[in-house]
Length: 146
Image (cartoon, rainbow, N blue to C red; front, side):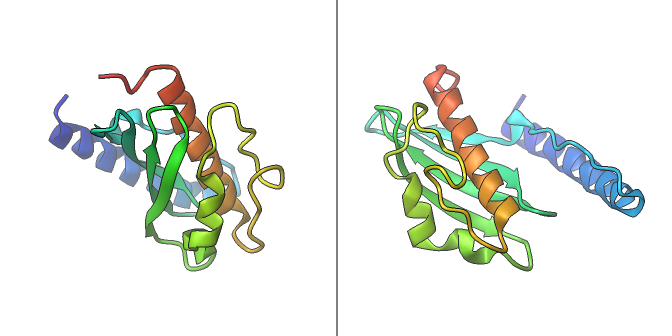
């Protein structure tokens, strides 16, 4: 599947997911969020690592995250590319994002363990942390080898 058709599929799924979420919010029925791997973009770097752009859910909206992974499987850097929530923007702060540098698949990567929680942005903090952990696991498993 080409990138254009994968993006088209993702946009249809995103619209469908948001429509269901609005309906679920009205009836207070929680819905699980399913990640679509076809929406993840990754590039191999000249140093042997990867650069991954992925989306995680904040509280209500998607957060676009870019993660640089060194060849040895440690986080080089993360960036919040797009943050659409009306609050919790502190996850964009460089000091909070710096906690991920050097983390690997062997790191706990859990809020209040090795990653500090942000009061008022707990869900965004948790979901970004979980997203970084998921990407590191995929890298370690060889899913990004090409």
